[in-house]
Image (spheres, rainbow, N blue to C red):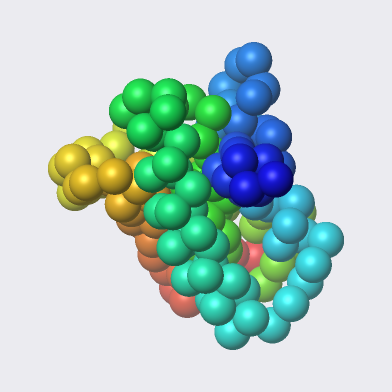
Length: 151
């Protein structure tokens, strides 16, 4: 039962087993949770922090069994996608699509310090790069909203 829980969480409810682009599938799970559970931003922040540490725990265990940064681990994408959406002044399908695209861009391209953050030990190296990618996406989205570019 413990292994089922670890893999269920670590694989983003199984989305990490997607045969093509498991990280993208994990990001979509993150979007779906925020879309279908429209909670207050403070709740989402608390959930994001909680699942960050759950992700460190689960991904550390899965990494020991499957090798360095196994593709099935996508809880990092789920959490990173949540970070990209935190505290935005508007939530709509257009915002979700833009947040998804920006997050995936930064997650795939890994500009500094995202690339260096993967060197952290155990699950921290798996989780933190996606959190930083989410922060980058969130900053761009906040700038779009705050400068009036969003209409």
